[in-house]
Length: 257
Image 1 (cartoon, rainbow, N blue to C red):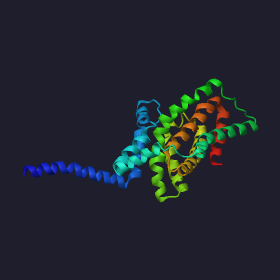
Image 2: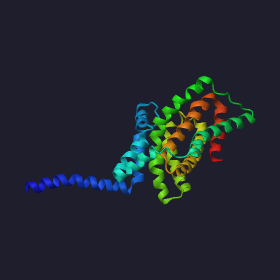
Image 3: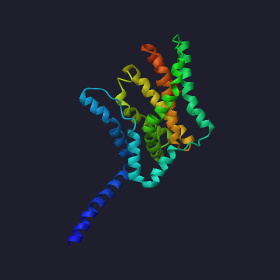
Image 4: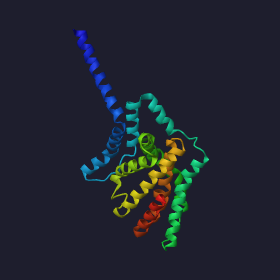
């Protein structure tokens, strides 16, 4: 009798763990999104309770992707995800897009502003020298923190049942909502619509880049880091007031062009 009770006691946690894994596997996308927001928003929620301000934890999507992949897909799933994160053999043309497109769009936005009588000062040499350090920081903190989740985990699953366009249109508003802690502080109210437009355009481009680079998350990390480095790190600080708002809308619409 004692042995039977011991066996049952040991078996119950194993059964519960198995059922939990099955639940996560059946609801892998929902589980990922819930955990991504939970791990990302907790600093913001704590700050709100204390009456202060805080942005999201950019590592939240990465942590959520690793947890759900491990529970739902096991070692094979982890190998696939980690393999995507280091897939660097994507061809010269993909690298040209990764580094060239953000620069091209920012340059086009600056040119349009100048045509309409709002020229933007060029970055200083000191600001340019800081770019490599800024790029590496963004790559290892924001690119690594976000892209294995949004593009490494969520996008492939969405594309199993949806076209790339529909998958992007599903992912874009979720990604936009994730940025809620930044609204009103890092992104002033006047800029929020433009920021959301740029996120939609960015999502569409990143889906296309993901597919043409054979599912490389490394490519997404580099692209995200380049966009943030050139825009937020170099150009946006050069503008204030109405000039910054105007630039944001021109820049955002170019992402959809």
